[in-house]
Image (cartoon, rainbow over all chains, first blue to last red; front, side, top):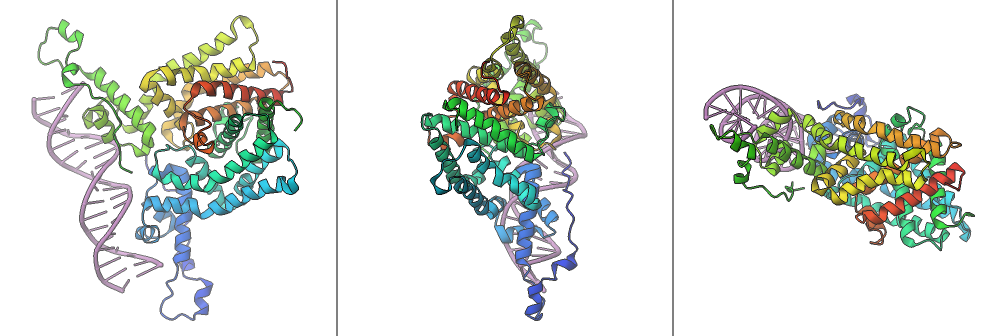
Length: 246
Length: 246
DNA sequence: GTCTATAATGGGATAGAC
DNA sequence: GTCTATCCCATTATAGAC
């Protein structure tokens, strides 16, 4: 288990010192206000490495090296490893939740009743969008979220994730329940939970389906998957909901 | 993050020395053939701890302490931490796979065509059976399997899991495809993959549904879940299979 | 804010007596 | 097969100069 360092390209140090706002203040003393850059670089590196090797499998040394920063700076900016992990989760959570909520609001705009497919799509599409077009940072973040969803509950550093995302999930379940007024509330929860499980699995572990299907299915082809998964789970909901017409 | 040792009852040392075959050889020297017990106890402890804290989060020192054995014995019996992990997976794999295969054979006995529910049940019931009535060891093992299914692909120690379980999963997918001859093979794989995702999530993380549903759903109530999950996914398969009558 | 240096601890792994 | 003792290295975390 040789701890491989990730294939990160370290930016040359010269770039680090060339911030544009440094020029405006006309170099009195050496401009050392690199904090925003360093902080972000540490967060980026942590995000990438936590995904690749897990929380325990990643050391602050790995992170510092990948970020091109000093080990001590992780402690200066974040305090501890757990705090750093929390900061990684927190950084993009609000935007992500806002996008999910926005998508839900959009399909229910004007009090109209959406289709099951529309509600299911509203939950997966903002996420897929980020993976496909949000750049490497978002790609790592989403996968990290999916990974966290599968970690042992006992871990104390997992709490912040739940805080961010529980509320919006409830709103989706609410909307689903409105679509199937005759379905037991319990069953709506189960159905949506199964749906979340499929999504997090997909985002997390691109390899199992590919292998089991001999390449027929490709978990990395997210555009195809959005169609497949919404269709399948819509059928599941309609089947247990007893209504074929929505 | 205090590393709690599991609630294992240490067998008193007196019992350790009272193996029946020790008497047959009429105590020449001190009978030290405790290997089978020690080996199993290390495996048991490893199984429990890997589930609780993950691979990297568990040290061989933790395992040895929980097993009531010396640190060096883990190396003597298994070689390395990775090898120990593999041994944990291997120990119960054959029996587990045999039960899955047996359940599949049973619902297709005599060349008869099973229902979708029967095939889905054949995949989840042997597993649930072990969790409910297989004792603590099986309960830990199944959860460990579910956990492994969600770990980063890159980990080298995950290979043995795939080796054991891929074949039988293919057989289930085969049978499913036979039930839906008009469904694209690809879609059968997707459906079964979603199903596996829901199962592994359920076995892994008993807490998320409970929380999201305010206790309405309880992931620990596996008997209820077998009904819910097979019903939901059968509906999913029928919906995309275009056949309402099987 | 950044750096070097180091403390304090725990990790995987092995040698060798019994 | 079991045990003690130990090597060597990585880890989290902090102190203090600049």
